[in-house]
Length: 390
Image (cartoon, rainbow, N blue to C red; front, side, top):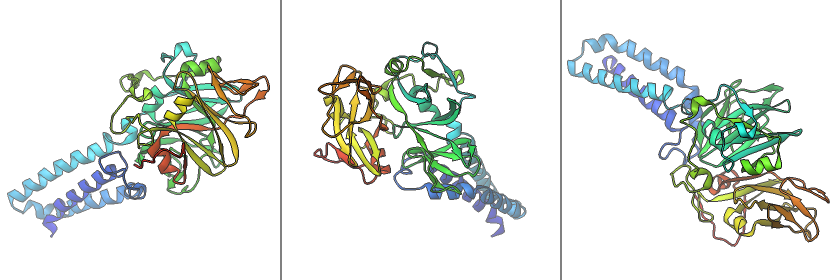
């Protein structure tokens, strides 16, 4: 037994390192089951398992030297393979190695950002301070941290779910630091540096670790073209990409325009398919998905969710969208160029009008498989269209 210990330990280590990557990265089959608990357990056990495997190799070496030449060659070959797997698992394939963070987030005037005006951004306004974060950049980084109007913000984006979220990164009175650890159920996972807990990007919930069950406070944000965002917020600052990642930034518009057909990030132009676009809204515990194609056809959707009248609007660029609370159920809106109006009053896409300002409602464009997974009790609009499940 002792002379076989090095070989068995090397095989165990290779399987362990490969499994630790497989369960947390978007590899074939890994995202179809809820694997985050297994991935987290493997991550927590990594050093004890590595120590055990090394100890077994050292323990068995004296007997291995006295074994046959064939056994020594086999063990040496397995050692090389294990070394390659271990190196790749720790220095090539980790999410925070594949998708690195900028040294700092530089915010500049729109003309200085080097971003085409029809590219999409995640926009944020805090206390009159408007910021825009192009998907071209944050789609690669998956998250960036910034300070807006003196407040720390965590701007996140997952291209596989098409989910843009902005959170308050403060926990227990401290601004938390983060790293990208991988993916669960096709959604990016972040780790806080203080406790090592893992958080889901789609809703800011800690799924495993000491902070399990804690939910980050989400900040209102909007997805628009840079042109539309600047029109609404002329004094906005725009994130400029880190020149170290010029090759990594997405120069192709296919993802943003929905013309990509890649397995993970491609779009299905039909309705209610796993990779179809929806606009999701959550109000007072109720969730509803609105078919993007239906919104494009009508320009506006007037609806009532959780007893509250709302309206969704897509701009004439067929990319920018907003949602507002309606004054009452009897008041309906229609789009008029890049504004919305009732029978008597017009409002801009920022909600401002002669009769006052409409209350914005947080709405997010994402893939149907994402919204359905993370909002399992969701309803659909229009509900008459056949449902497709992932």
